[in-house]
Length: 315
Image (cartoon, rainbow, N blue to C red):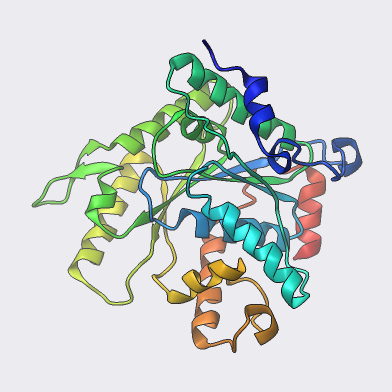
């Protein structure tokens, strides 16, 4: 028996199924255009996807844009938990912290059958389409494994951000290398997924995603491995057509932010962060700001004229 899409939607919690209830209608927003879809994805867990997604969403709101977040990782729920913690902390300290509109797919959307995958894909596509008129940007955080909705998210992406840990074990998902020359010798399984998604967009008459690979969770010390990974990513960038950007360092402060749902972009005062700010907080903010400048989040497509005007006003 094929899964029923309406039954799946009915099974979701009210805060997921009725997302947008009480917000402005598409007509009231005056946007008219389509939101820019930003997908943070990798088939490896522990690469910092949720941390990047949270910082991207808060950065967009601070720039005057209406941002929604979608968490496809129904098991880990890292992004959802971060947002819940942020809401709770804002109430506790009496601060008006920016909160994105949020959906977490708390049901099982990776159906085992081929027909089920089609249904799950359509649920995600319909959900994103519903958000389009109301928001300027939609940030999708994905699980660290392949699946129908994961692939559908890639096909929806205007901007695809792939955080990657600093090792050849992680680079193997993008491509294989000669052990002696470090030349690229083949296409990795995740690169094939992205290539397929880009092809789907081109076939539909849309521009392929702007793909950024983010070298993330960097160690603070120089090493031969770091130099080799850097060379490998530069070679892959030329072969696969992605932009290569230095990401975030491995800092304790990012892990500390989770319980309060904070980001490096929030006010660096004791009341907000719950402790005396340190140089680690300042360094993390500078690092995040440099990363955001390199990402070019708003891009040249996907934002309506009113959204661009709001972003300029916020700046």
